[in-house]
Amino acid sequence: MQTNKKNNKRIQLHQVGIFSRLLCWLMVSVLTLTACRSKRTQDLGWAKSDYGAEIAKRLTDLGARPAGSSACKQAADIINEEFQKLGYQPELQAVSGLGDNVIVKIPGYGLRYNRKDYSKARKLALGKHLGQREGAAIVMARYTTVSGENVTEANGLSDNAASIGALLTLAKQLKTQKIGYDVVLVALCSNQTEGAQTLLNSLSAAEKEHLSVVYELRNIFGGSRLYAHSGWNSLNKEEKYQRRLPVYQIVDLALEAGLGSKHSPFESIYTNQAGFMVASPLNKAENVVYREFTLNTSDYRVFDEAGIDTVYIESWNYFGKNLEEIKQTDSRLYSESNGLIAGTNFDNYTKLLENSSAEQLSKRINSSAFIVLKALYKGALDSQPNTLNY
Image (cartoon, rainbow, N blue to C red; front, top):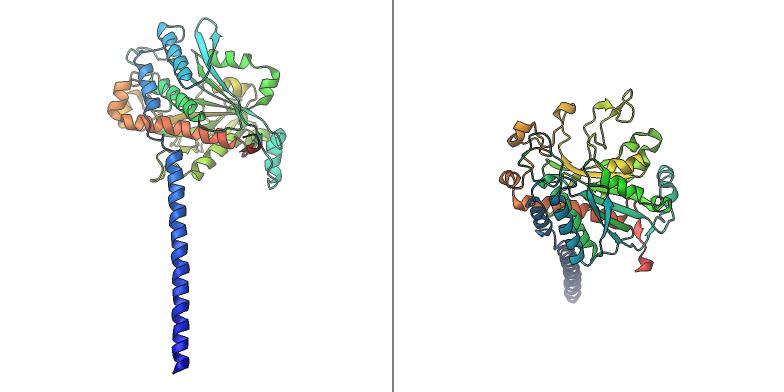
């Protein structure tokens, strides 16, 4: 009888011990999750900011902003002043006969590509970047507008005021981040690609060698969803993987951050996976798979032609069985222009927000800025900031 009592007591004590450990584990888990959520909330407190959307509105209030016009000059002044308000010292770079590029240079802390577990193919693709402690990235967006014939109502919200809103949102967030890259932010004055060409021509041979990647933001609002594209130089078979690494990195980061999920305040980003054959833009006699690049041309092509890795970010819709089915948007609201917004009368602040919302404008701008911010922090080639320099 005495023995049974002792055994029962041991069992009770054992059960209490298990319960205590379980309770302790639950408390630690809750505290950890709470801390993680608090950190996430703190990090992404700007996710619903209207700052970039307000910048875009100010630019569209100027009306059309063709290069060389008085509205173009006013737009450059607004951007210059905003950079200064954020604590930067912007430089004005003259673009012959058209206006100025507005440039901000942000020194980085250096990058370290020091992983030892790269595959042989990845090491070959990374090439000179393995082991290096520095690198530079350009992020650019044009502030001018380009319109088609008989276009009188466009004030360029999608092309390209929203992208300038994203560029300045990025500039604002970079004030709170330690980035490995030396970052150059550029608001371009371009009619065709003059602003980008002027920028490239201003770089020394050493600066070009130091440059790891160029990001361009354009047309980020009007289209169905955000896409990231590699440059045409990635169509060279022997360079394909290396040239597309920066885009692969962006997609990986989007998945890692859970972009587009119900828990994320940001939209996700995609790559063109149309998959049908098209004539190569580099050699019309050759057919290539229409995947992970775009036939849409812009300022990124200047750097692409110079052999520099590029990432072109735009909003479009690449779901289709042929080029005729590929449109900027599949919304029937724009059937009159065959799904095209850029360069048409639909690219108007009031019209676009009638069919969308101010909230969606802010979300698209902030999502674009967040994606580039993550890429700048991580490095386009899967690196990490050199924390020894912090």
